[in-house]
Image (cartoon, rainbow, N blue to C red; front, side):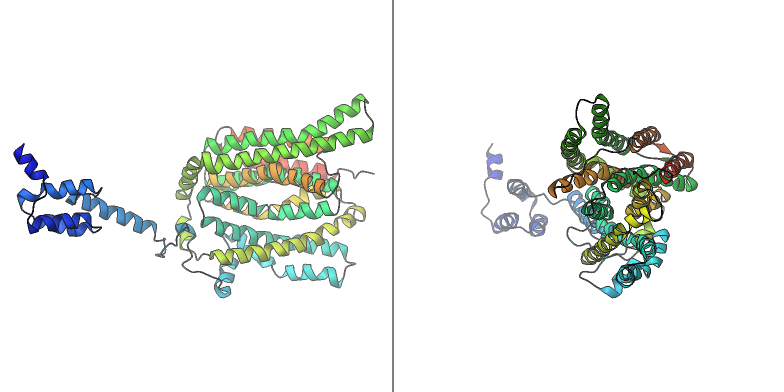
Length: 486
């Protein structure tokens, strides 16, 4: 006991005071030096002092671990191109620059994210022509419609590319969600312009057409293009199953007002005005419920189950066949992403107004049906950027990311964008409801069942993709011959 108490009591020599002062400081290397110089009888004291001050005792093993941790942190703070990562920016999105540099931004935007996306930039000269022709020759209705329809493609592509660049700078799950949302900006703008013009039938067809174009045409192209390069591709159950469940929920919500209208009208228990008023109220309540479901889905993906989706998306990025090439490309700064988005969205708004104003002429003078414009033409240009991104990811064997974009865009349209139009119409005092045509409802439900069946086995190939595209083309043919209401 006497020896133990002597060891625990602080010695009075100069060497002991040096050890104690160094151990209480914030410089462990000084304490380590003092420990090396101390005699064998003094070695227990610094160990006790280190423990009492919550410091790690210097040793070869601990020193090696500290060096390894510093090395790992250093690797995470350096990008593939050797650039130091700024705080809050993911390594994949680090540009090595800051601010706004047009001479560097424009070549990056021109190169875009893939060869197909770069080809769309060839159409940029059409944009100023499409914007100005409405003021110069407003009587050329068909030319205005065609030029503005084509001009929408490079603008939508620019929104998709800038959104993708911004998403790479952010957390994985949040980045995918933001990219999907920005890809839907064109759709939201088109819907708002259609509401302002009170073209309700075109909006109703466009809502369903957007869902069909994404979950049949885009998904089919992903399966088919990816299947041409890879014999069979696999994706995680969490991505496919959650997407199928939400699509069924959205389909059920969208058909309720139509089924109610058909059932009550068949009974003859109420007048047409009374039925329309009830359907309008049901549509507004249904829209609120669908938007609530979308909020829950976002919370599920970003908060409670974010780690699962993070692991899935990171594994997908490791399988990217062009990963090294993508990492070596120059990136936009955050400011340049914002500038590109503002310019592109502004152009989309102007072009959408010009395009929508010519729909009446195309329908009445050219004999094109409302159903074909809303169900096929409008959705194709709305989701163009989203389709290119998903197809490029499928080509690179990133099926989980491709499905996240395809199903995410479909879910956002059916659970958020479509119901949002009803609520905006409500705020403007317009009778915008979800009383859809029976043709649209039947096609929607059958499409959801077809896609759900293809997602069930968590595998895809070019045969399933070609079947999805065939179903979509069949719907397009029927929509083309669908008569306009008298």
